[in-house]
Image 1: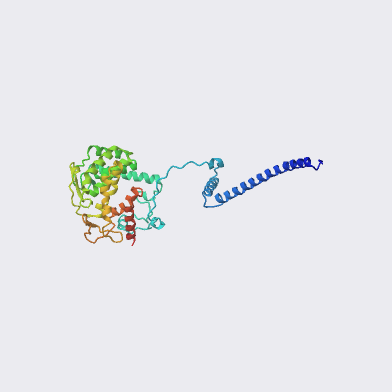
Image 2: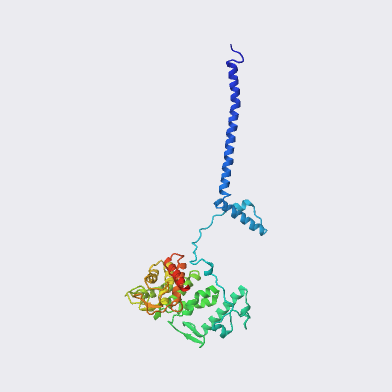
Length: 391
């Protein structure tokens, strides 16, 4: 018989059970999803925020550090504006100091000066009197800057009055001295006058270079004219903002000097004639006896000309010295002052990092800096030389 407990009643109970079961399953599924989201979020926070080494933690730390600093300064910014970060411009390669330890970079100045200069002049490092002109008590940066400019201007006036157009002023005799008749002081001062902001003096110097500089000279010092004439012209080009007059002059002079490096070893001969026909010289010559300063203080200027012109022959010629130096005998990174420039054999047993050698050791580190840390060979020379000097 079909009654309330029969098949019809059974189907009614099943439908009721299904109506109860379906919402229960949905609620259970929602609960599981919520639990998973909570656990995942906690794991994310544990990894990215609580881990002090994570990138996210670093961002948060930097954010709150900036907020703390601003709060200490009394500044207020919203969190929303602070959290917006702008993309950073690409950074230039940072040079690492070859001796990063503090003791290699910070030196304590002596409180007294016992040198002959101090005894004869009375101007000592430990003498805190102002002096007759009051210079000893000037501490304001702007005033010190102006005093330096005034001193340079005063010196320039003396050179103009007694030695204009000549290589050097003989201050004691109030006349001039000529080494090479190239106006060394004028050309070598171009960048200094620009840096000091002495515009009138700079324009006088530039006018002389335009109208009176004569490069057609016999028997000049390759070393001196490289650092003072070629270096002066290249530096003037940079500091003038690209005055092409100086670049043209620099290229002309570099072409005149380049054959001086066309020796059997590639080491520059000590003296060379920068005449108008010297550019045509192609014959290989002997370097002869030279010293470290004369042979090793050329690469920066010639490398700069290559950088400005794209002509590799200048840098390649000047860098040959450093490659030859690798095979030269040395004592703890220090080299004999004079040597045979063709065979790289010592001429005597004199070692120094003073006169006739000092600038070569300077150029070891300067050449590395000039090339933004790419001339590792020069850096290696510098490391060994400094270690030898400290022994």
